[in-house]
Image (cartoon, rainbow, N blue to C red):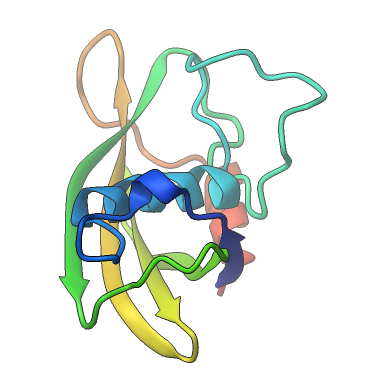
Length: 145
């Protein structure tokens, strides 16, 4: 598991003063990219690109797409906007042949406000078929366990 602090933006808040449910999914994406890396083919990677905590995308070439096949989000309490970064615990729950299930816990102080998961699947751009995780990816995942 990795613990992140992700800045909240004023625009993340809704009319009720808490973080909008749509923005939670955006924050999940932000946490995933910070923790596991930027998918290949989605921008220019250079010396200014942050180093991921665990490079889940290590060895994934440009011929492989990194897609999200499912999100689940469980709101346990409101996550109020405070102008402070939100603490997000993130890690890998399950590893399958061509996918991983990522878990998230968003905190309001010491209390969990949101639990969520994303299923990330690796797919061939050419065939549209799943691509099995490489040994390098499995080694990276093992760092979290």
